Length: 279
Image (cartoon, helix red, strand yellow):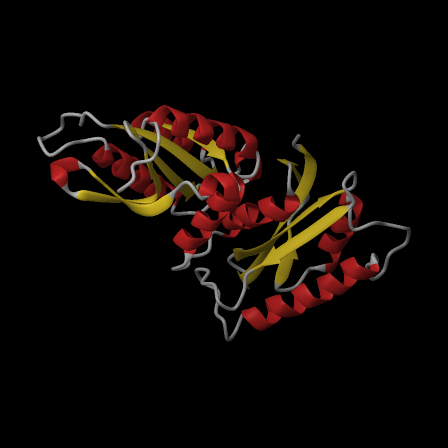
């Protein structure tokens, strides 16, 4: 079950007179779970207006200091006992960070798995450019959510779609009567609308035969896993609905709905019939 966590956003001040700052990191913590996590921009990432030569050294310095403070469980100038799992600790940190790197007031968010939900929180708040290997990473998250037993029934490949042209899909199971297509998308990033449109377009083409817009006799069962921002902070609910309605797909959160994803995939495989020997 999701539980209440707190989070805050680190911002790098580019111009204090014009109040110009850029989000460069996040913190996520919970007193109940005794958990505190941070994620800052890395050297191999691109964030608009952040210079690797001029800005990252300051960000890296704060990151290293913060890691040490969390490890020791103590901040400079404490007047009372505080824990890095408490809002009070992070409010005190806010009073300390008054120069180039600053931190926001704590805010509440529902979180189920901080180790997996920290990255989507970072992506939705900092919004770095999507790396080239993002497709491979989301494919790996999908396979991990399914588990080896189910994932082994699928393979990368294509199915014939609109105008008889192949549609490359992330994972496919070709049954005796139907095809089962698995795809995944990260809805926590700034390019989430484009990624959702790609999935919908792919699924719509996959359902069509070579004669215009008529549905082909062989059905396609579509299941799409997605990575969401904690508490839907990226405003991605409408994109999830678009994939379900526009792509005629069942959708499942890859962190919070793993069991439902597995059950739906097993049902789809059964519905598709025995695997084709030459698929």
